[in-house]
Image 1 (tube, protein in one colour):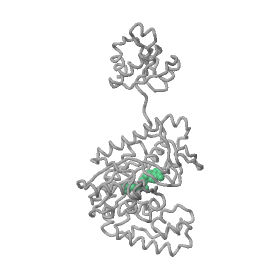
Image 2 (image 1 turned 45 degrees about the vertical axis):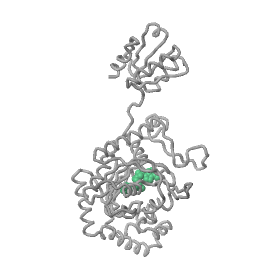
Image 3 (image 1 turned 180 degrees about the vertical axis):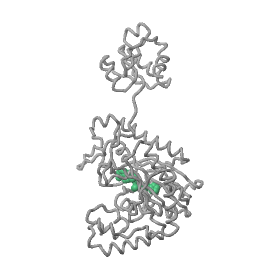
Image 4 (image 1 turned 90 degrees about the vertical axis):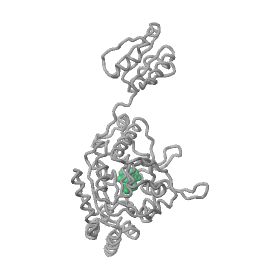
Length: 440
Ligand code: HAM
């Protein structure tokens, strides 16, 4: 794993870890949030651009959803879900309506689908922040971004494969290699209910051996006990009944077809019979992509699955659905660890250094910008030395120098800042052409 030097990492645009201040001074970013300054912000945005390209290129269209909803929209995610019961940021608006910042976007997307009735199948992608009042650690924040897709109206195992492969290929496009794809089937709604009963019975029979937290979870949602990473639960969890033994024939066939599809497109996977995800709406296919470059507790860089009953729960006609969401911060942390998705040059093309008072820099930068050349300058009539330092910091490839000499001769000096190829005097009237030629 690459060792992190915070200052160098910042210059490379690596992703800063969220504020973890326990005592929260009021004028600092709230716990679990963080500021993204350039160039980390440029890399963050570049990741979103790559995702948009990948998703658009597969026939998905963007949906932009509200960041808060009536709290009822999220309650449909299941009262047994921590995300809903413990982690939601809820508030009343001035009209007394109970609202919540979205903890994820699937519920909002489904709400939007029911409300707007787009043509079927609806293949949508999204990007943006989500909010969960979590215990903050590296890779686990209170405001975090996701990119994701949702497909509504297709009951075909091969769309499950498409969705999973899209997530996988996106990560590969970023340059990630140390990843594992886990897939599982939770069966259809009936299988799932039967399995939950069997699990409840089993865990109850061994409740005395379970940790106190798992006994509590058991009362709410036996499936989540399978998720326990606590050592004292390990042997009980290892011997728990398997969902694979409770799958109906149709669900087993669906799952087999998803796997055949993954083999056909060359996406490596591991069937993980104990993969249960944190949200309650899943049936049949579920999956998670983990990065071995991250700590186990935060290693999931993305996940998703089928949620065939959710549209009905949100007031629509029965409509199958499947999707995924990928955590942007965790993905960038995984990229940092693997040395992947590094930022290219982010500087301007040209920096104008003007020691004649600043008016030349004003007109030159504007001419350049209007011609589509990224240009910057210094202000406050600083010394030549100070302006040259600013030019270096700007990352510009070229400096345009205007001193009294140049001004009196009606010329400027074009200097290459990245190599020692010297400099060139050009007529003021030919500057644009000279710069464009040099950049080309
Ligand atoms: P999720 O597993 O809760 O699923 O979140 C998806 C990804 O978001 C996680 O794998 C992780 O990378 C990231 N993530 C979640 N919580 C945090 C956090 N507190 N801090 C940083 N990153 C986090 C969903 O949200 C579902 N809506 C996915 C889905 C879409 N299923 C069907 N369609």
